Length: 267
Image (cartoon, rainbow, N blue to C red; front, side):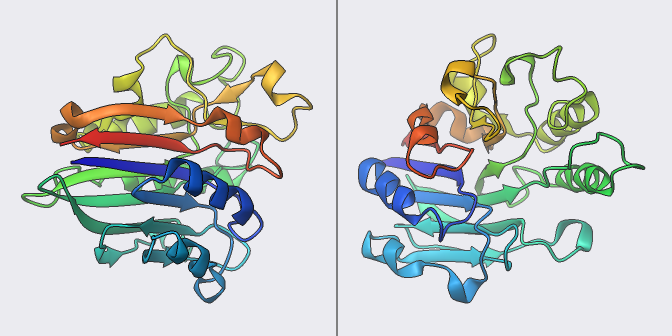
């Protein structure tokens, strides 16, 4: 059996449904995780997904901001969401599904961006981001006996030197400051998570999933960052067949500044 799973910060699901539909028609993942859906649950465009076979839907939305969703061709159970930092943001949803004889808990996260100033005192948004990552350190990949785990999403941190276009120039830029990268690395270590993207493509190869809207020619400048991630419990590592970063989606009509990342497993 094979399993294909995609994660994508869509930056408003209603605004970008044409490219979401294009992606689903072309790539047909079994499961799609979206972040920054920016709409309440009752306004989520459920029907276009259902028409394509994604009849199992776990949605946790919020008006105009945040929002996460899991759209699946496989049945979903035990749907849950966590309010990290207790501020009422829709930044996490999880569900359980079965694939290849395994029961898998899937976590979908949208970590706060953190604003522009990497200073907790001057910028409360940055403090919120650090606190959020601190709570993520409590999430363990083997938390549920007899179950595997996958964690995906826009984690808004590029943790490794080759996850950004210039390590030296971005050390004081939010998403690559040492306090953030060390925090996310510790969350991975404490939770015994496996970084599947780097398992498939080790450093020093550059990996990017995000290119700023501020760049007039994003492709030529290629000043990207790996802000989107796919982690798993270690038992799933040997089953990973491929990771695909759909760079071309950044050039589609009315794109998100993030592109889809797909993981394929064989059992």
